[in-house]
Length: 263
Image 1 (spheres, rainbow, N blue to C red):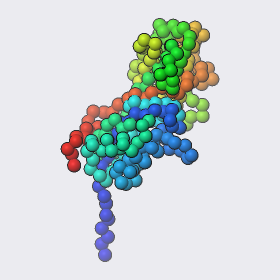
Image 2 (image 1 turned 30 degrees about the vertical axis):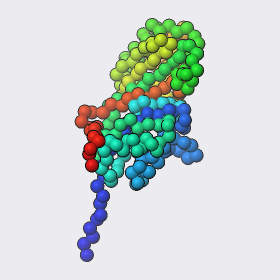
Image 3 (image 1 turned 90 degrees about the vertical axis):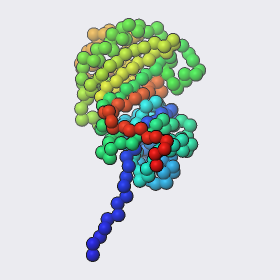
């Protein structure tokens, strides 16, 4: 007797997501805690009427926000863009699906990413509307020295000095593409992009650069911290709620827009 295997065609989709990290214990699903991944999987499973599991481009920590996180999932349904409105109607207000794309079956949100871009926001003037959105720093900062020190990061590859303790990393090497401080009225913005980041790396870098801005560290001392490859030499991580994952990059052609008419 010939056995015919019943296979259901699966389509691979990619979603772009924004969320308020203060409402969740990070991205990754964990027991007895509300997470971003869990909320999105529940909403997708309800909307598509099938069990959905998503894989994110990165795992943001508790309190870290995102304006451009990406994740992929498989579905037996052929979707069009209108599903975004349905999913957002199910999701809590603190999470939003911004866009949905189709991709090739082999696409992987984490391993196919060519860069991640982060932003850290610092508020120089007490502002009740920036609570849990930016770190309040009531000190005078030397932005020129912070800018000069930040450019030193481009000269290095090993960033073990800024990696969170007890992290399971096979390598501490990162290729930083650009780094820059910008001022927008009373808000300082730290922009950084790299092919990958170590756990806690951006918050450790910002915390150490702030000591440069306060005059507690010289630029040569900042360089020595990087060269030491020892987390004990870097300064404390700044608080998570000023950090945003703003974008993830992929090779051209992997993310294909869905239109409103596709069935």
